[in-house]
View (tube, rainbow, N blue to C red):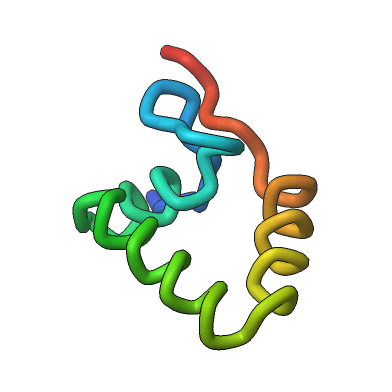
Length: 67
């Protein structure tokens, strides 16, 4: 049984810092700029919570393998 699924990965081509927002945008099929704007708004609203979450995701989420 061959099941295909989407895997969340960090982008290696459309990255600003670690590729998290671009990877999330690719995963959700939306423009990464929208994800980046949401992240900036959340940083102002929650402070260090989003920054810590971003750093944890940068360590846990694997980079996209080049094909």
